[in-house]
Structure formats: C-alpha cells, structure tokens
Amino acid sequence: MTQLRPRALHKVPLKTVKVLVIGPGGREHAIVRSLLEDPNVSEVHAAPGNAGISKLVPTHAIDGNNPEAVSALATKLGVDLVVVGPEAPLAAGVSDAVREAGIPVFGPSKEAAQLEASKAFAKQIMAEANVPTAMARVATNADEAADALDTFGAPYVVKDDGLAAGKGVVVTKDRAEALAHAQACFDAGGTVVIEEFLDGPEVSLFVLCDGRTTVPLSPAQDFKRIFDNDEGPNTGGMGAYTPLEWAPEGLVQEVIDRVAQPTVDEMARRGTPFVGVLYCGLALTSRGTRVIEFNVRFGDPETQAVLARLKTPLGALLLAAAKGELDTAEELRWSKNTAVAVVVAAENYPDAPRTGDRIRGLKKVDELDGVHVVHAGTKLDDEGKVVSAGGRVLAVVALGSDLVEAREKAYDGVELVQLEGSQFRTDIGGKAARGEIRVPYTATGTIPKVQA
Ligand code: AMP
Ligand code: GLY
Image 1 (cartoon, rainbow, N blue to C red):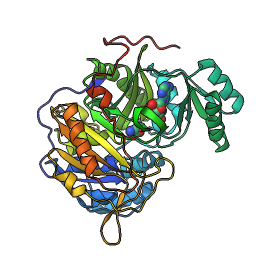
Image 2 (image 1 turned 60 degrees about the horizontal axis):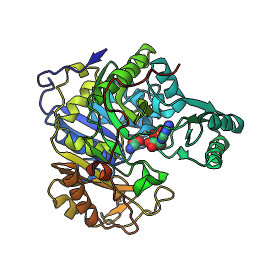
Image 3 (image 1 turned 135 degrees about the vertical axis):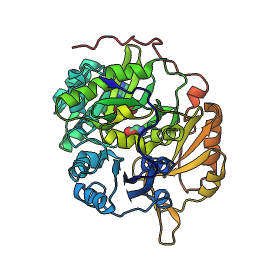
Image 4 (image 1 turned 180 degrees about the vertical axis):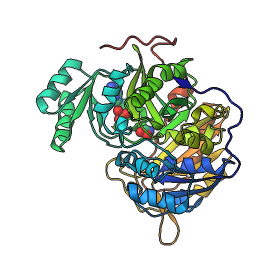
C-alpha cells in the first residue's frame, strides 16, 4: 500500500503542460479555473465547455462522450494531459481511447469506471476488498424487490443499477413508492439494488488515485435534495461546503485505510487499475463509517468548493496521477478559509428544467470580495449573452474565514443573480454553521467489522 509522503516541490518544469478538459458543467469550469492558476500549465482547452469556460479558454464543439472524437482532438491539439470531468464519457471509454493515443489521461478506464456505472459491481468490489457499506441485494423482478424491501424494512432504499445522474435513488418510508420505483426500473429494462437505510450525516471525500497511490482531498458535504431541510426529490447536488469542522478527527485516514486504498488495491489486483478520482460517498452511521456509493470522478458541486481552497497546483497533481507518479507529488496545501458553493437551478429542475432565459448580475457577483460564479448549464446566445441551458445553471462560490462568513458571502452573491423562475436552497451549510450536526460515533477506529 502506498500513501502520499511529503516531498519537495514537484518536478514538473514551469509552463510546459497543455491540458484538455472534457465536460460541460460546473465541475469542469472549476477545474479549468484551477488549471489556469497552475504555473506548470501553459495552455488549457475545453470540450464542449459552457459560457463560463468559453470566456476563459478555447472551447471545441465535439461530442465529449465519443472516445474517437476526444482522442482525435487531444492529438490534434498536442496536449500533455486530458482531464475527463463527467461519468458518461468515462463509462463510454473516453479515457481508454486517449490512453491508446499515447496521451496521459486523468480519468479511469471504461472497466474501472464500472465502480460508478454499476452499483452491483461496486458492491462486489467492496465485498472483496472488505469495505464497509450498506447491506444490499440485487433484484431483477417485483417479487425479488418485495422480498428485499421486507428483509431490510423501512426506510426503504431503492437504486437504479445504472447511471442516473444522482436521480435514480429513492429513499422512502412508503413501501408502495419503493416498489413503484423498482418496477419503473424493471420496465426500463434495468435491475435495482435494494439496501439497508444508513442513518447519520453524509460526507463526500475525493481521493486522487494513480492506480496504486491514494491522495485524499479535503472532505466536503453535498446537499442532494431539491428543497430546504432535505425535502423533495434527489438532484445532482444543490450546494456544498468544505472543510467539515464537525467531522471526527482521523476520518480521512480511516477512509483511506478502510475504503480507498483497499478498493484501489483490489482494482489493481484485477488488472483494471483505477486512475482518477475515487469519490467516496460516505454515511457516518451509528455503526461506523459506511460507503453509500462510489463515483469515479469529481463531485459536482463539491468540486467548486473543494478546489476553491486547494493551493497546490492542480495540473501537476492530475498529471502525476495520470502518469502513475502520485508518490512524487508535493504534499497538498489548503487555504485556511471555508468554502461554500450554492447552486442556482432553473425553474422545474430536477424534472424538465426551463432553459433559454437570460441570466443577469453575474459581473456584480464576481466583484464581491472572495466570491465567484462557476457556470454549469449556461451558454452564449446568438447575441453573445449568457442564457440558461440546463437544470443546474450555476453556483456561487464564496470563501470566508469561517462557515458563517462564507455562507453570508455566498448568499449575498446568489441574491445578485437574476434568472426568471430560478431556485436555490437557503440552508447550504446551515446546520453545520449552527453546530447542529451530530456524528453518532466520535472516535476513529470504531467501524464495526463488516458482515460476511
Ligand atoms: P447515491 O446515488 O447512491 O449516492 O444515492 C443518492 C442519495 O440517496 C445519497 O446521497 C443519500 O442521500 C441517499 N442514499 C443512498 N443510499 C442510501 C442508504 N443506504 N441509506 C440512506 N440514504 C441513502
Ligand atoms: N454532488 C454529487 C455528485 O457529483 O454525484
């Protein structure tokens, strides 16, 4: 097992790394921003990007989910590194195509991306690597689903097995609703994973991996439901903050030791090494830390908050991961500030979001001290004006000396954004700022043994 050891400055010479970032969202805008601040990076390109990204770097109108199109663009541009943002291109094999073209890529192979693309596969790896997670059963028909629901009892957790942008999961006390979601997945030709309910606060921990070595970033908390107080349907994520003052000391090391490193080791053992971000979605339950899910890429909008605090040059770090050299990377440095990201979503998100509306006030937000806008579903219209083009339209990201100040600044920014019908949660980081988050266990090393 190899974990990061502190080292001197990374050896990448100044201004030599040319990077192509794949993806259209807020996560990619945040990544592009950080890459531009890296003195090792000479040039950044993006495909397809969004209105915010296209103001910073050249963008290319290709299908980012098409492996051949991405590797052709990367070759044509002569980049030294491709960073793949979203899960869809990873599951489609974009990283494999770029790697075959001889270009280092930050993002797992199609096979390794199964850790996110198939929840059943993720459960299998976790079982083999002895990673603590919710007990689960795969169901392929209504009878099996009913049986599994009754085994675990309420609240019921029913997950579409495939990729669903965070929207394939139903958590409910209503047995009929749980069964109906399972049936809808079966009708669509899929299978479901039914799990025991995990109580306790959730944490997102991003772990950079190069196939062998693991380097954790700073933990964050995401807000998945559309409405305040965690009500309404799940979304891709409505806001985030980092770091987590309330997290037990030693949590990160525990997750590396019990979750990330064993998973990376198991993937390597299988001959499908994991290169990229292993996003550990965790619940801190009364029975210890449990994995809720793995994702194989940076989280959105957590990345907007996490990268706002990262002082270590991002390009050199991702290049080191892509080349299997994370053990030589410099030790991560972080701003002492707290970062909060509040998502502004379109009317009717997450169902059928309204699009095509003018967005005003963004310049005023960027003028606020320590506050910036990260674009997600935006584009430029024929007149070059920024209009909405997706469900989660943008995030306002603020840095403050503590969570209370960062929240105030973020919401000051959100108030300046003008988009008809738009919605946002008013409680991002609210409970934590009021000291109301309770972790059911406090010490480390308390994870009970995983059931066989
Ligand atoms: P997932 O797509 O697996 O991350 O699930 C989306 C969200 O559903 C998670 O962030 C949790 O809020 C919730 N969830 C998923 N699995 C469970 C579980 N076993 N117990 C409680 N909540 C869960
Ligand atoms: N914010 C949750 C995700 O990226 O899946």
